[in-house]
Length: 431
Figure 1 (cartoon, rainbow, N blue to C red):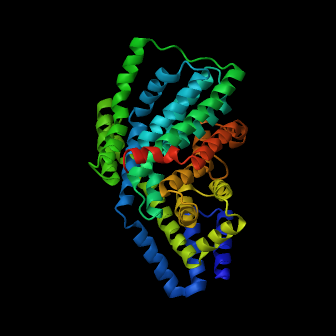
Figure 2: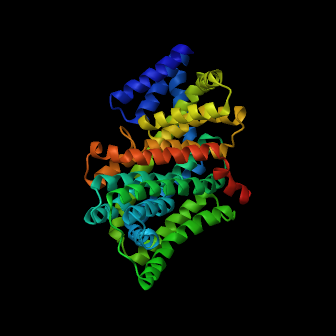
Figure 3: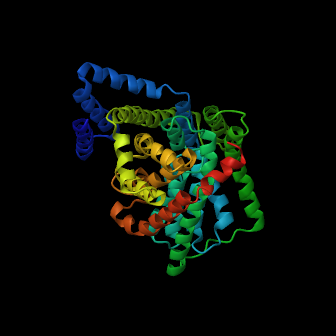
C-alpha cells in the first residue's frame, strides 16, 4: 500500500511539473497506481468504469446548463446593468468605484455562477472606468480578481454542486442557501480593505446619481436580479430541483437576451460552442478526480491522513486550523473542481465523525479556502483572467492583492469557527 501511495503522489506531482493538464495528470497517476496494485487488465477496467459511473449523475446535468446561462448573461447585456445598479447603491462611498466593482461581481457571480465569467465581464467594464477616474491600475485589477471569487460561494454555484456529488448527496438547496451569508461577509471584508486603501490614497468618489436616474437604473436591473429569485426561490419552495432550475435559468437568460437585444441569432452557435468546451473540461476533471478519489480510498489514504491529523491533536480548534492550512496550500497548486472532489472524501469523515461538524458547514469552509487559491499563482484561473482583462502582468498585481487575501482569510476563519454563519439560513428554511 505504501508503494502505491508513493507512485500516486510522485507521478501526479511529476506530471504537473511537466505541464501536463490537471485532468490528464489525475487520470494517469490513478492508472499507474492501479497498474502496480491490481494489474493491467483490472486497472484499465476499473478506471474506465469509474470515469463512466462518476458522470452518470442527474445532479451533474445542472453544470452545463448553469455554464450556458452564464455565457448568455456574460454576453447579453446583464453585466452593464448590474454595474449601473451597484453604482447607484455604493458609488458615493470612499473608493466608490471599487465598491461598485465588488458589488457588481457579487451580483453577477451570484446570477451566472461563474467566477471566471464575472472577472471577465465586470473587469472589462470597471477596469477602464477606474483607471480613467485616477485609480491605480494594479489596485483595480486586485479588487476585480478577489471579488469575482465570491460567485463560487453565493448561489447558484457549480462548485457547490460538485461538492454535493463528492460528499455523497448533501442537499444542494441547503448548500446554496448556506452560501449567502459567507459570500456577502467576504464581499464586505473586501469592501473594508478597498475603502481603507482608497481613503489613504485619496481616490475620488463616484459621480452622484440623481434620484430619477437611480430609479431608472434600479428598474433596468430588476429583470436580471429576478434570476436569483426565480432560481433560488424555486429550489427552496420545492417547485423544482437544482438541475431543473439550471434549465429554467437558461430559458430566462435567453428571454432577457431577446429583450435587451444584445445577442443576435448568429451569436448563439459560438455561445453554445464555448459552453461545450467549458463543460467538457469540467466533466473530464470530474471523471478523473472521482477515479483518483476511488484509488485513494483503495490505498487507504483518507484513513491515513485522518489518523495523522488526530495523532497531532485532539483539539477541534487545532484540527480545523490544520485542515484550513492544508486546503489553502492545495488551492494554490490545484484547480478548484478536482480539489473539491479529492479532498472532500479525505476531510469530510474527519470533521463529521471526530468534530461533529455539519457537512453543509464544511462544504462552505472548503469552497472558501479554495476561493483564495483561484486568485493566487501559479494556477489561479481568476487571477489569469483578471490580469488579462486589465492588460497587466501577474507580478504587478501580487502586492496589491495581499491585503485582499488577508481579508478573505479573516472571513474564512469567522465562517470556520462560527457555524451559524453557514447554518442559520438553511435551518430557518428547514433545509
